Structure formats: structure tokens, C-alpha cells
Image 1 (tube, rainbow, N blue to C red):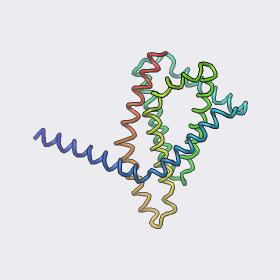
Image 2 (spheres, helix red, strand yellow):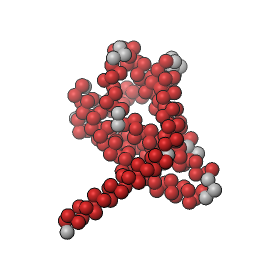
Image 3 (cartoon, rainbow, N blue to C red):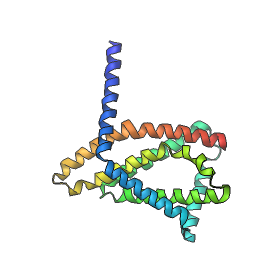
Image 4 (cartoon, helix red, strand yellow):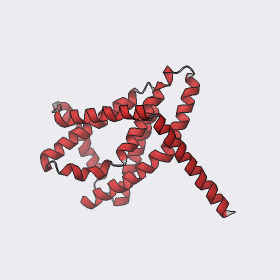
Length: 201
């Protein structure tokens, strides 16, 4: 009886993961678009000097974030990073319902800030430091790209003939991907990032 329940549970997760992965493959053009926008604005943030007022706002945001996480234990950091990324990913996806505009704006903002921070880091510590930053984004960025890509796709329902039916289907499939793919990626990302920040800090 216990074995039967375990097999049923295993089958549920296996099927959920497979269906989620299939939907990601179906949505790949939207995800590729998000990756392109992100990389474009990351390069802009890296190579082009930011206007003084924008630079000040970004630095204030980073300073506030550092203050907020100062003195946290490893588990507290992991929890903070996970829930912060969870919120960003979920909102980036669900608010894509408005023609995908929010998803695109979130993408370009994240890309620009990462490019800006990378440029400042290289300026102070040299280009080799970028390799040390790689583990921080190896799971987090794919989760973000998938969320925002699905958000962009969600907003495309208005261009379909059966709008309401399409929206329901997109929401259902996106929720499944969020549960079976994005959340596990964000858990792994938070553990790696929180542990590294704690050890290096």
C-alpha cells in the first residue's frame, strides 16, 4: 500500500515535470526574446555610462539591500534570497497578462542593473572577478528567463481567436511550470547564493 502511494506520488511529479518541460519548449521563442532583451540591456549597462541620477538610484538600492541582509545567518540569507526571487519571478510572469509589457520592463531593468553592477565590479576588482559571480546566476537566471518568457506569452492571449480559453490554458500551464520547474530552480539558486555570500562575507 505504501509502495503504491509512493509510485503514485512519483508518477505525479514525473508527469508534472514532463508536461512543464513540454510547455517550456512550446514557449521557447518567447523565452529567447526575453534572453535577447536581457543581454542587450546588460551590455548597455556594462558599456555605456549611466546618467548620474540613475547611477545614484541603483547605488542607493544596492546599499539598502546590503543593509537589509547585513548580519543575517546562512539560513536567513537563503530564505531572504529565495522569497525575493520567488516574488520577482511570480510577478514578472503573472503581470505579463497585460500584453507582456511588465515582463519586458522587468527584463530590461534586471539586465541593465546586472550590466551596471558587473561594470562597477570589474572597475574595482578586475575582469577575473566575473567568474566568481557566475555561480550566483547559474540557476537564478534560467528561472527568471522562463518566468518572464511565460509572462510575455501570457500577454499574447489577446491576439488569439479564443481569448478567454487561451488565457485559461496559458495560466494553467504557467502555474504548472512555476511549481515543477521554477520553484526548484529558485531553491537551488538561493542555497548556492546564500551559502556563498555567507562564506565570502
